Amino acid sequence: MRNIDIHAHISPEPFIAAMKAGENWHGITEDILPMHLHNPRTVWTPEERLADMNSWGADIHVLSTNAPFYQYNREASKTAAMHRDCNDYIAGLVKQYPTRFSGLATLPMQDPEAAAAELERSVKELGLKGAMVGDHVNGKTYDNPEFRPVWKVAEELGAVFLIHQGGDTIVSPRLDDYHLSNAIGNLADRTVTFASFVFGGVMDEFPNLRVCLSHGGGYVCNGIGRMDRVWEVRTEARANNTRKPSEYLRNFYYDNLTHSEPALRYLIDTVGVDKVLFGTDWPFDMCTDWPISDLLNMESITLEEKEAILYKNLEELLGL
Image (cartoon, rainbow, N blue to C red; front, side, top):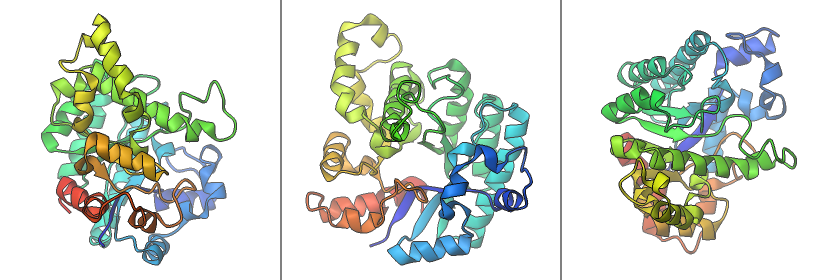
């Protein structure tokens, strides 16, 4: 069965070459990207990546530059220059392997005007399908009006935004042990992001914005009842949106990366299978060993639902 992976990361080869030579790349060194030191797959060549994909039956990776390259805390012009090179690199791989790769841009979100311009370049000139961004930009959530230029351009282009945490999460200050900043924090951050888009009025202003919440949307589906209740009883929760939060669930997409068949079943039943996309989190350890087989072996998911998740939804969404 065909499959398309919306959630597959990559590090630019020029960075890897600089790292191996003990040099920096746009001021970035291996010292601030420790993931490359303990995960061999992050430094594989495209050919090694394709061999691995072939070994477990992966057809297409929608490539996104690894999240530590967000670098939202740096001077915007320096981040923007690095991101242009990241996006050019992914576009080159898509051109070289058009049947195996598609791509998402990375954007200097600390400068929304520059981010909007780079998104437009990436989609119109490079042929990328959208962008991957973090859950916040130096603590600013996406209801902040300064990000409106990005959402305006994204909606006009029909660009897809994959939301994926970068670095510390909301859990990190309270419990930064046991890898819980990832295991719990990723999901908590995604829930805050959903709330910022909905309660902040972004989805009312840009109803055709296409946003995918990675890691199954975090705790959104589990917490939606409480969000509805606060919308009903608190006037400040109704200040910017016209409908209760549960009525916005289908404004979003969600990858299937729940690590639980009952959780995936609940996600499908809550948002509709047409909003669920196949994602693996390759090349990281939270990617399961056999993600396609895992999904195909789930007895509670019908064949039609598996086909929709694995490829049909993304074929339509990305035009692949």
